[in-house]
Image 1 (cartoon, rainbow, N blue to C red):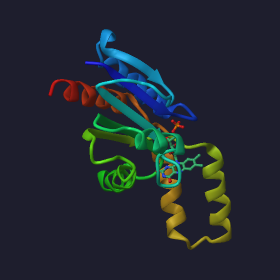
Image 2: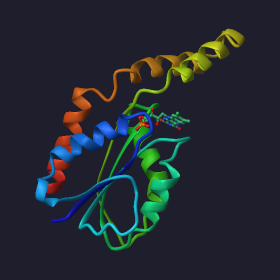
Image 3: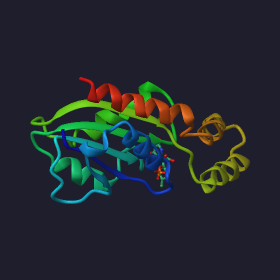
Length: 167
Ligand SMILES: Cc1cc2nc3c(=O)[nH]c(=O)nc-3n(C[C@H](O)[C@H](O)[C@H](O)COP(=O)(O)O)c2cc1C
């Protein structure tokens, strides 16, 4: 089977997950590892992105839209959430870019740390609005995301790919 890992990562979180997934794929089956590109001919497309304003990146949207009659496994990192409910909502939105002719064979998400500037903004907002509980939750979530992806996330990603390949 020919497998392609196609992903977008800015600060490296999604890249770490992509590399963990790569470890689960036999070397002779991995035909592509990198950013979206035309003319990748695989049997299984493992497509990943960081989350930008509640969606995968534009480049990944375009890549997904170009796939027909293919098997797709989707992975992503997200700063918020850390819950299946959040990831499911996110994936419902992402899935609208995948044509019905494809077969979605699985999805994997985990949290990914965010740039410190995001926390600085929350902190400055909370000084202006000290009673805003949502801001407090956002700061707590930011701090929770700081250690991710961790070893456990990487192992889970690898296991996820192994289980897909064993189907
Ligand atoms: C401009 C910007 C927008 C973001 N929007 C979201 C979002 O809507 N939902 C979310 O869960 N995380 C969001 N994040 C967090 C990133 O998706 C998260 O940190 C991700 O792991 C970054 O992946 P990367 O290191 O591969 O670039 C955002 C981060 C940035 C910088």
